[in-house]
Amino acid sequence: MVENDSRLAWQPAASVASFLGESHGLWIDGEARPAKSEGTSCVVNPADGSVLSMVGAGTHEDIDAAVAAAKGSFLRGAWSGISPEAREETLRRLGGLIDEHAEELAQLDCLDNGMSLALARGEVAGSAAHLRYFAGWCSKIQGETIPPHRGGPYVVFTQREPVGVVGAVTAWNFPLDNAIWKLGASLACGNSVVLKPSEETPLSALYLARLAAEAGIPPGVLNVVTGLGAVAGAALSSHPDVDKIAFTGSTATGRTIVKASAGNLKRVTLELGGKSPSIVLGDANLDKHLPSIVGAVMHNAGQVCSAGSRVFVERSLAADFLDGARKIAEQLQVGPGWKEESEVGPLVSPRQLGRVLGYMGQGSQEGARIVSGGSRLLGELASGYFVEPTIFADVRDNMSIATDEIFGPVMSVLAFDDFDELVMRANDTAYGLAAGIWTQDVALAHRLARVLRSGTVWINCYNRFDPAVPFGGYRQSGYGRELGEAALDEYTQRKSVWLDFS
Ligand code: NAD
Image (cartoon, rainbow, N blue to C red; front, side):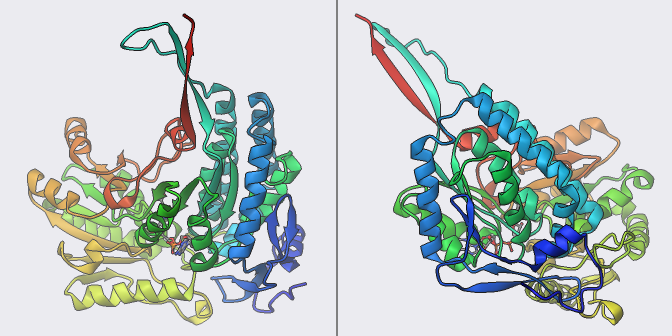
């Protein structure tokens, strides 16, 4: 039993309080088990530094057990061998259970990650919709009949088969969504999964594992091992019986995972970081879109891989833009996610706080001008990891706040004069996750969308996601796609079958 820390200034629902009060084991083969080492670690509330709960600290031995359970369930056909209809019904049931337990899941992600309750509720509703979308694919994953180019007495067809055991390693910024984005497509295709959630935010994944069992997902098909990335994550990504790693996280860790995957040449998909340009052309409708342009950076306290944090503004509009953006940023309510009025929550951890404050200091040192914010928030928020929504003007392309992913509520504003120069500068980054374009000129928007080197381009909107629309990065923002039909390719392999009828 975990004592509720007296600093927790808000009482969540009784069912959430009871869940937090448990000391959580790992979820392996359909049951909760303590880590083999008996190690545990604290889960901390970033809004006030209190201890929320305790979880098992999984090590390579636990990963071995979880992978063995996943492999056993896969080879038995416990999930891969049942009818697509049965898989579809089970995934729909899980979507329904997520809806039924939406408030519990939202409160858990709000407490664990710091995001506002409104954002967490949206995340949970999106997760249920995601599962229902992928449930529909179960019966539609099919091969083709191929007439051989060189003829012959053959019937040749392909069938699409699951890859086997999928290791899913996820980040902390949208804990439930990160997991569901991997589980929806993996499970629809018939794979068995070992999920290693971020050590910062493991709670909703553990709650989800119970719901999955209740929905009828057989033991061994979904396993959750909590633990450190360098220990449990590393063991999973180098494991010889894991057939594929689906990773969401930083570009640096992505590189480590690719190296670790080489031992058995497992397949890898990577959803990594970004430094996405948000391009405000001279004719942009600021009255209508300025809140969205600012929101594209401040959403979830800037802890969004696709954050439109490198804002290029046509010079003729720069003064109006900065004035309007400053007013919006200054009005954003910063506070604990559980307060209905909070719009920007804390950063997830002291480490993230230090990183973001470091970049704020560096921006000033390098000569950028703070238009708004720039500091940590103390006073009644001092025990949490809060910073002010921050806007820098006079940013130059080579400053660290223009090149590095900060993953905090920090907007870097860069002025531009000419279209060709803009395209060069916007594309001059190692990343390529997303881009935003704000203009009333549809032709110009299309011209720009075509030349921006990123996996997603939003025009007059930002951070729109839908289970049917593929998402993923160009260049060092990763490879492979999540969401949509494209995700099915990542979790299946094609077998060609030849029959000689001569
Ligand atoms: P991170 O790379 O530190 O950690 C991500 C996950 O990897 C965690 O579960 C962690 O435990 C694990 N991990 C860490 N070291 C590991 C290792 N050596 N081997 C295996 N696993 C290891 O990233 P983070 O700080 O949790 O998340 C922030 C990053 O994630 C940002 O760069 C952000 O852009 C990115 N992100 C990308 C997307 C996307 O869809 N492209 C979405 C969310 C977050």
